[in-house]
Length: 228
Length: 250
Ligand SMILES: Nc1ncnc2c1ncn2[C@@H]1O[C@H](COP(=O)(O)OP(=O)(O)O)[C@@H](O)[C@H]1O
Ligand SMILES: [Mg+2]
Image 1 (cartoon, rainbow over the protein chains, first blue to last red):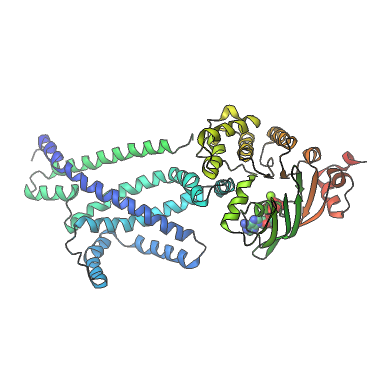
Image 2: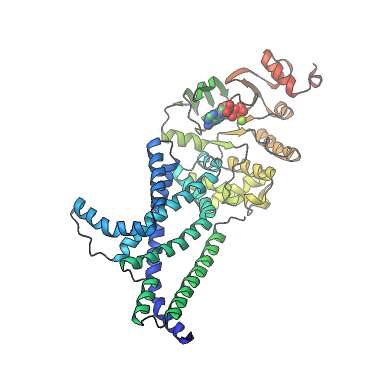
């Protein structure tokens, strides 16, 4: 069958609205990943052996589990766990919740590594100079150390976000309708007659998103480059 | 004005400070000399609580502090009234020169922005760095960065400034400018402790020289006494190694 460009456009615009779902899980997973990744990174930076060991073991476990396996564990296992522990039924929660939990867990591991090495890369002297000039330790972190960590970590965080978006497309295996889920269902509805048009449209959407993401990163990078 | 009594500090099994006493009066310029590894940096750091002494007493502005037990409030008070100039400058790389100087005023001391900037500009003027106010540190030479480091210390009007080998990370041709700035401050009666190996500078500005070795004060006195009539063998040895003796015949 001949490739029909007008169908490419048609499907492009049919799939595009579902980018909202992709952005939602990528954004929220990044947020949770950053929060818990920072906590995990502080564990790993501790002198305290127990916390440090916990951080290392956690990283090792979740690095070795294939993402789709983790997604199934979260999707099928978590509702039972929550039901048994707290007596709350989350069986009918929206599917995106499980995807967000899964990729948060995954991204938390890589983000904690990125955060840890960014922290190490900032000379401790600046922190000391800040507290010795009268800043409180928390002010020294927020005003001096963290902005510089962001600059160091930004390229890696960008890569992780792209990876998050790709991992999230596994959500279709539990029936999440994001751009990938929508493309699949469009393909089934049309009996695979327009399979190429549909998936080329999908690839274009992923491609455009990553271009926009890169632009956004460049803008942030400029803001935190401090004359370098 | 600042008195330390019996300051001790170990890192693991290494005893770095073995009971140091020093006394600094208002307006004093105290130079600390000593071989590397003798604990000079550690001593300055315990004054600023960047390092917590294992034991010792500090009398500062008439108040007595237990250096091991001083609480957050006391530590913050002492830090706000002392300033530290670091060997490797330690400027805030994410702030401009002006912001480096205003940070301690605006954030640390709640000085209104306009007033803080005025003070910062005056301090930068003093060290000859005003025209670089909007530069980021990464664009400056080591000597310039250190002058900004000094301005940052001066701007908060501390009771005492602690200099830890302020010129030893600099290329030789940049040392002079920085020393000139410190001399200028010394003439303004700013109280300071300066760890340095610059002997002629020490002779010029110090009114007290302390020689430290192996975590203790070996000898102290006027520059004249220490450089020309040292009593202790260790002091003589140290001086003969860093200054050709014939410069110092009496
Ligand atoms: N944080 C630290 N941990 C372990 N050892 C340290 C630490 N800081 C300094 N030391 C050791 O203390 C000794 C004295 O160091 P320092 O005070 O820097 O001497 P100086 O400034 O006179 O050269 C050195 O042997 C150094 O290795
Ligand atoms: Mg030193």
